[in-house]
Picture 1: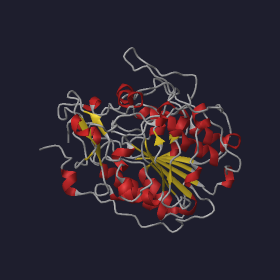
Picture 2: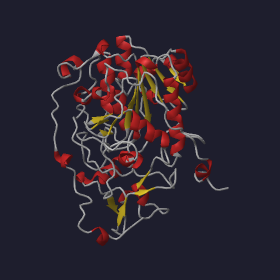
Picture 3: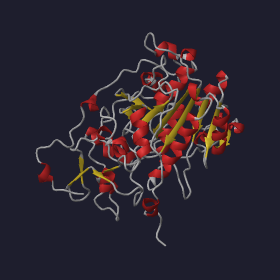
Picture 4: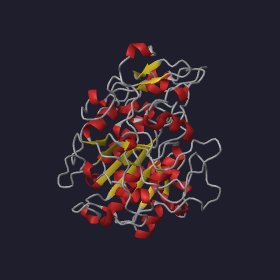
Length: 432
């Protein structure tokens, strides 16, 4: 997969995107209501005909890795790989172009810590992905440059080509899973830059769960093995709202979904469905397809919106430079002497995001900047809830993904199957 630098002479492979140095205004603060932050004429509260918001967050895949070929395979307006995307190899300096990864799983997890991700970002050059991913089984780090196609994940390519998607949706932090998932439900990571568990049971909060409880909005967390919302004291105060995933399918079938639902995949096990490398990505695709199909068949479907996103890039290459972001609060990153010095003033690496709803605009691509707090802000906008931090106060709720006047998908579309290829799945099994 490697080629000599000279073969690509004259191509601008690693130049920063124009957005790298652009700043953004942050006029709103924690507590700001949607009615005060939305442009004139934008709907909020009961003006939005969505009664059930479902949030499903998968793990550790960048946009270019998952959907870089979408522009050639179903959605030409999506900003994906252009044939001139590459990174210098670890150790040798040779150039590794993006390539089709034939495996559905990886030889090892990829680097995506705070330090690694900042090195991958490299001040907007997006040139450190291969360098930070060198391991004995892959000394050049080339696996960071691999991408999937519609042959590998046909359901996903059909889903993102059919419903409204974003091609400038970013993770919230240049860092790993926990901080990014904290931003989804709390608008901040409380200074965390690594996958730290709380040191006491009341450390993390407030969160969206507190907002929902205070407003009398119904909610549940449906989970397979670990409910991520359990980190938050405001959620743990209501253990009856933590239910296993089978209850999601039962509630969907009965038309009994809550107003807000978080659906967590299986983070462990032989059929791990969160897609975290080195897991088989087709298991995650099948899980998401099951959730989507359950909603299609549900009596709640006519008033439902499902947000599917990924917590962070997992070390995989993406070519779009993360833009500047609003600092969420007064808590700085909890840096150590060996941490890359940085703040929470920039979004993380770009990841996939799609909105599945009867009101989703058909075949639509949003080029506006969003991150995980945009989903949080949509929840706040639908139920007229105050912002938790300055980050979600200033986040753009993805209202442009919807046409609330015309439910184009009231009759759900037919999407490709999410089958698991047994031969390719066998490549992912340990020897013996």
